[in-house]
Length: 344
Image (cartoon, rainbow, N blue to C red; front, side):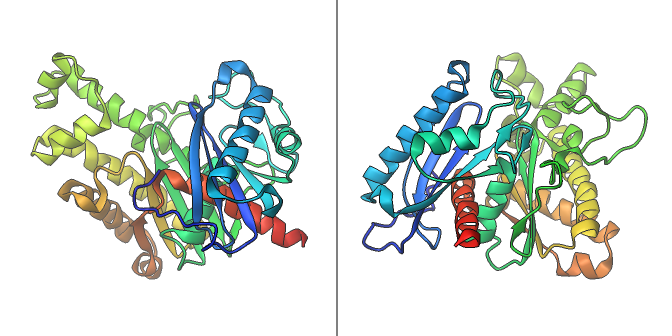
């Protein structure tokens, strides 16, 4: 739970209520919010991928009952449930297709099976879109009409909101912005998806570790080396710590990451013309709380200013997401709310 978020009581809440489910490869976050997006309770249950999707749907339904009991909300007061999921999917059909991190769950009608087990209608959405909608609804983007959210982690997730609507695309593959091409060269870096030159190959946590390891293998001098040789795992956090205390190589890796993010974001800015871009996920190098994080954000904006149309760069708000790990379930609940209002 994001420590900055505050729970409200059922007496303070405004009905109807919505439940958001944020499905991940390791855990499932479930929360109940009121009609204004304020959380009343939250929990996490293990995904246990190996037990299969049907069992997971049963576990989600049990988790929904638990969060409602903890919040003191009767199930009859819940209008809709929202489910955010990773992996390729068919959103209108409510189907998981080929989710990379959910082996054995291929071609599964997850929306309808969860609805069956929990006894409520379910709205189905990509997890990146859910997080973006959460920020748009009650987070750092609530003053924006349109926004792009990039989540920086093992990969790069994305969600795009325009005029209050999530951009899902004709084939439910909209906002796959970690896979926009930032380097078309034939020797560009490989992305985890098997293609070259994608943003994720340059600015994800995986990319940071790979580039750092290449520099270590090349014998370059860095204060990262003794820590790794002493047995510490090579992570973006370790790179950030050494960059913060002045290691040139670590600092170069962080700034190179910002450079490629800036290049990628210019493509999105020229395509979407959003009010703002929000950065979330585990890899923001301390964000505004550290000097390194502020330099990281400044370097991204510097590249945007240099490459984007002047008017767009001037008016764009570049900021950090504010909901943290809550964004997924709150956003899934928000999209469920939008679906409910559309059908009223």
